[in-house]
Length: 113
Image (cartoon, rainbow, N blue to C red; front, side):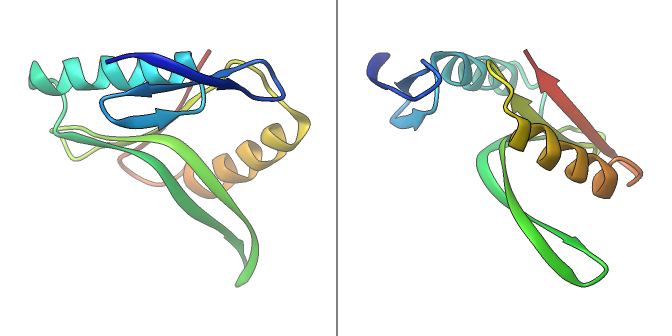
């Protein structure tokens, strides 16, 4: 069931899908797409809104909340960020996330716009 909640400061409308509240209609739509892929057995499983600690040389820099983590059958893990509007803070955190994770085996970083 779809229904809209409220606007955030960037104009996105919080939307409920399958009993969960997503930050935007776009994000809820992507969750629906992941459910369809799961039903079609294209992916193993998926998770939403996971906190990832971004640490450099033993120092905690910040936390990053990734929109989705998709687990593929070949054991590849895909981190998916659904972006309608990019802020300077998001760009910095994403660059740090890329620097820490992009060279790891079986990891895919994806931004969906």
